[in-house]
Amino acid sequence: MKYISTKNISPPASLKEAVLSGMPEDGGLYLPAIIPQLVGRSIDSLSSMTFMEIAQKMSAKFLSDDIPAPHLEEIVSRSLNLDVKLNQLDDKLTVLETFHGPTMAFKDFGARFMARLMSYLIRGEQRELTILVATSGDTGSAVASGFLGIQGIRVVILYPSGKVSPSQEKQLTTQGQNIQALEVAGNFDDCQSLVKQAFADRNLRNQHMLSSANSINIARLLPQSFYFAYTAGQMMHKTGDLVISVPSGNFGNLTAGLMAQRMGIPIHHFVASTNRNDVFPKYLQDGHFQARPSDQTLSNAMDVGDPSNLARIRYLFDDDVDQIRSKISSWSFDDQQTLDQIAEIYKRYSYVIDPHTAVGMLGLHEYLKNSSRNTQGVVVSTAHPAKFPERVEPVIKTSITIPDQLAQYLTREKHAVPMSTDYGEFRQYLMDALA
Image 1 (tube, rainbow, N blue to C red):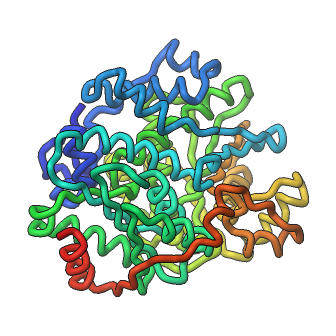
Image 2: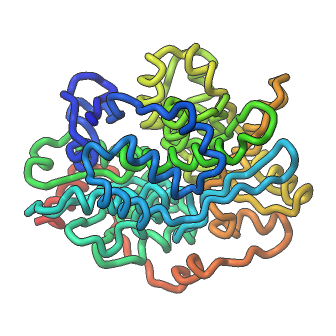
């Protein structure tokens, strides 16, 4: 299978080229040239398949032309052996828990899969592969865990100083080995800008083999599409249209869901639930996209003012905002609404959610208020609430048990290199570190 740029200038790329380069030279993002289809019995059988069975089936649709079956099966089985749980709160509301991996966030799926896929793709390479990743929280944690100790790969994580939770910071700054964290004096968009400038720097890329582990890399999105298919299969026996609310920041998770939908997975509609960083809801309202600096909120992993994956969404819908509106609704919510929702869900269901999931809940409620259709609502829960005890516990007025996989990081010593938002400084750091 070939992968094409959303800007349609760079030539189609092979899987290896698309994954290891991260971005096309024209500055677009890669998408599969053809979205493979699941039809008939393949769709009907989803209801009886485990998540791993679906992951194996869907990965073969995308990757079997490039990776022999035994190797692909091993990549999938070793990286995606994670629990995916559907927790039904009432007859119309279900929570898709995607946070049961080692860093307790949905990004474990993409990071673990990408690490093993890249390890396979660089076999025989003489140069070390360097992964550059900007994070607003959970991406850095998942990438640090997923790539830890992988031979032939070095990881450099850029995160905004003071704008990630304490547990997130410990997870991405205490791994050591082949993982290096840079604490940037700016916001997530500044971190993302530094990474994008590095990829656009031809002299730098000619000297060093660079790739990305952000959702700009197509390898991150493919495994995330699998749990959307699993959800649809598990919901098939219920009456009503399946509507999935996705807490959205850089829009990679939503794009993965759209790819699953394009494959034929029966998902009726998506809700892109955002926090105060409301560039996407405004885009749907007036049809004009305007990036702006991101604001810091309680749902920090969604603090993005210029979401990269909007380029993929616009490409999938031929840059027609009316087509996008037919499949995606979007609303934004502030911090007080987020806290109130955490309290309400705990009061009503004795169920604890994190701030990102709370935004997803609010988005689904807004959709239901504006729709008369018979709906089965699913909210994607992207992170365990124990990653945000300082925000959640005062609201629910009880302590959250810290799982062992989080607790192990809290006593470790932080190691991070201070970094400004100046690309020249970042470039010099890379030249010195990769020499």
